[in-house]
Image 1 (cartoon, rainbow, N blue to C red):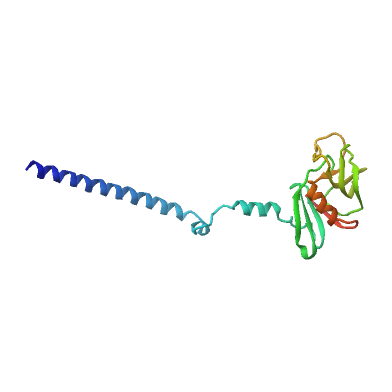
Image 2: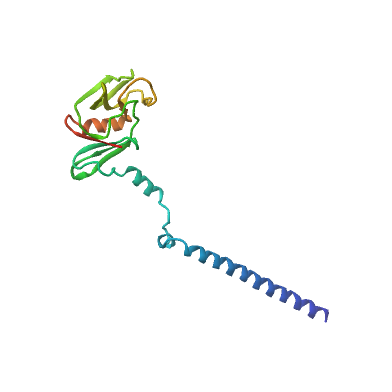
Length: 187
């Protein structure tokens, strides 16, 4: 008889533990369902998210600034420290980061005035692919690549107007921005 009683108790314990486990699973399922009610429909779809993805953020950072004109042009954003080379049909041919010097041009539309293949910059650094487009109180402003890869010091007391690019970006600028090319500077 003792075997019969001991056999019944474990069965009840297993049934009780199973019911408790099902109750806990049901509770968590309810919480998950309730949490999803506050999420956008896009986030509920597999493979989507409510917040912008890394590629979305990159697209926003590299999108051509609003009110930057139309047609073939160079667009330079002071705040974003970025340049866009925009070709026919308003197609972006290239975009890249730049490093400004201590003097920046005010937002406006300019034209490339002169170009020089190799020269020493106003900061004493040898540069190449110099594309000049503005003059601010006697300081010439232009894009260039430092041969040593250095970037200017925007906090310098010395007034310099070089907007430095990486070498490959400087080559692209040189090929794109011939004399007379429009340069649009935006905030």
